[in-house]
Length: 284
Ligand SMILES: CC(C)(COP(=O)(O)OP(=O)(O)OC[C@H]1O[C@@H](n2cnc3c(N)ncnc32)[C@H](O)[C@@H]1OP(=O)(O)O)[C@@H](O)C(=O)NCCC(=O)NCCS
Image (cartoon, rainbow, N blue to C red; front, side, top):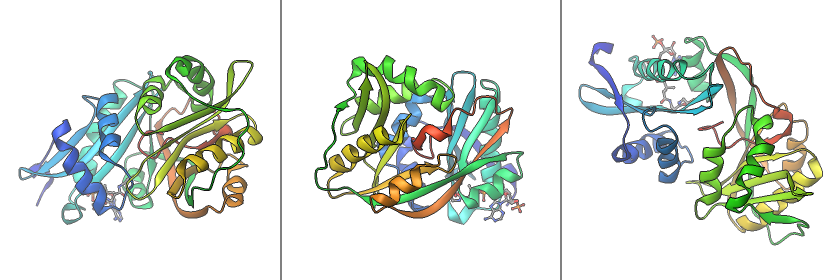
């Protein structure tokens, strides 16, 4: 079969069941709300590949101002791999993003990296997925819920850390049931925050961001308390020197790694040393 049989079209909400089927073949953690969020963030930037009329692959994009954009959910049905379908999806996603942002970024699995290496992506740093479990209630002085009126304050704090404004994403994450968004403030300004949301295999912490390890630990303890008995993933960034120690202290163990990669001029890397959990591989 040749690449001429492959077509890429826009993804719609009707394709979420396809997305769930494909991500299950890869053992990933997303739920339908994760796909809905991606479609809401990039309504014309999410794609499905068809081969001889059969839906066989997906890729999504999310833009953050004109600074950078994320490619995610790059999935090809196992029976259709190594036929150029991943490449066709990536070319579409890259073309879409390069019209809108300076840098294209993604979090690659080791398998995905083999494809992205062929398309001019460079490694930025390693991320690690750690697995742990919630706890019985812990002492969490000063932690408060992030209510919708705190969104502007939250975004002011987050923007320099992440490297761009992600208020649309944060707004969705703090407003969606049954997510748990928590923060610590000092003189009204947020100094640490974290969000816990449900996942297919385990709940997911992310983003988790803070200036001081102590305040991040307090937010983290509150998220563990909120998770109760559930398993939890925390996708940590290796440039942060404190996260591994924090995760080990609460019984988390490393599961696997991802490679954060970029294509173009990486002018807005943010401050990964203050990020303790990414929002998840799909959105940076
Ligand atoms: C990664 C993935 C999307 C690749 O899709 P694909 O349709 O097989 O990719 P392509 O056929 O376009 O591959 C293009 C090139 O990438 C490289 N490549 C892709 N998959 C590879 C693999 N498993 N091993 C080695 N090289 C690989 C090869 O150079 C390949 O060219 P070739 O087949 O002519 O040698 C697919 O394997 C997949 O869905 N994997 C599971 C989910 C996943 O890890 N996605 C990546 C998320 S970051």
